Amino acid sequence: MKRDVPHILLVNPWIHDFAAYDFWAKPMGMLTIAALLRYHGVSVAYIDCLDRFHPKAPKADPAARYGRGPYLKTRIAKPSTLIDIPRYFSRYGIKPQWFKDDLQKQDKPDLVLVTSLMTYWYPGVQETIEMIKSIFPKTPLVLGGIYARLCPEHAQTHAGADDIAIKPAEKNLFSLVHHYTGFSMSLAFNPENLDVYPYPALDLQTKINYAPLLTSRGCPFNCSYCASHLLEPKRMLRSSESVIGEIEHWHKKYGVNDFVLYDDAFLVDAEAHAIPILEEIIKTNLQIRFHTPNAVHIRGITQNTARLMFKAGFTTLRLGLETLEFDHRERIDKKVSAEEFKRAVKCLKEAGFEQHQVGAYLLVGLPDQNMKSVAHSIQSVKQNGIAPVLAYYTPIPHTALWPKAVAASRYNLESDPIFTNNAILPCHKEPFSWNTITDLKQLAKS
Image (cartoon, rainbow, N blue to C red; front, side):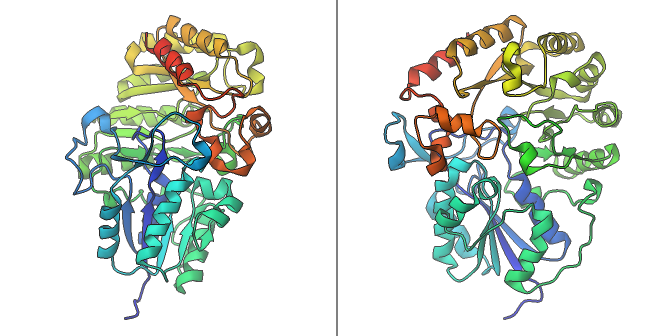
């Protein structure tokens, strides 16, 4: 029977990796696409292969660890190209039979949309698409997301999708739906105004254990190791009224207490953006918490912003430090100086933040990086009274650091995204050594 409107199935795929954990990781882009489709009258369904609260999964407390927690995992064979890595490899997410059952319960979709995140997670995308195709072999399937956009040729050849979406969803979604379903939609919102976007469709999840929150898009910096500027070249801001409206929506209607800022540059131009938002949050007097896994920019931390963040309920703060090699900082970014870092930490402590709440990201595994310099950075962060948080470098195509990563790697990075997995320290010439990572972890914790 022909439908008046198309039915579109959206799927968040499995992860295949040596390790994975839900550190406040939601497919924000896909949930926003689902919301936009619903807003324009399209029927949508959503399956999350990473669902920690699947009805068949062991019971888990959604409020534990402020919403974070381990994914279900099943040990699987390592990719043959990584056979030299002495670590176990797993599928993270729901069991394949559960996914198959969930697919079979669906009304036959007119279109399937699958997202992707890390480029080296594409084997999980492949398996997800293969399962979908086994149930709906004639339904067109389009792959989008970060892997699809950064590695389109590889995705086209290897992912198993019928099409690859390489443009931002707002610029491609409606024409794509029309192409595959024949359904035309008149644009009912202004893509250039974040205040009029519908809230992401978090209600499609089994549980809303936390709410991801974007108060802005884009980043004014162009760091050599980061793809943010490539994926979101335009800086866009929401009004404080819009942000508060969304916070109150999730808190009052769904009981959400933990909000996770996905902004890449929340504190940039704080007087015009972050400060009005923080002041309005404080006025609501809501008993809620905020977390910043994407890091806040150190230059934006002043006595005033530190005080307002503390009063607003910021509970987990991550600082984008990256390294304490300030003499050669220009090789990776120009975001902070030694004096600015020390001043920011002092402001946070005076505002009331405790040591366990504040961590500074330190990049590990950069091309030609000396592990002694990493150890020095770890010790220096600890001497400043906050926690060092190790962030292992992932080589990303099209970034300024990519050519150096290619030259420094013991693998042929350009031949296969699997070699960019940060867990294997791909930019070190020496064979992988678990002792290297263990020693750094011990140093950071001691």
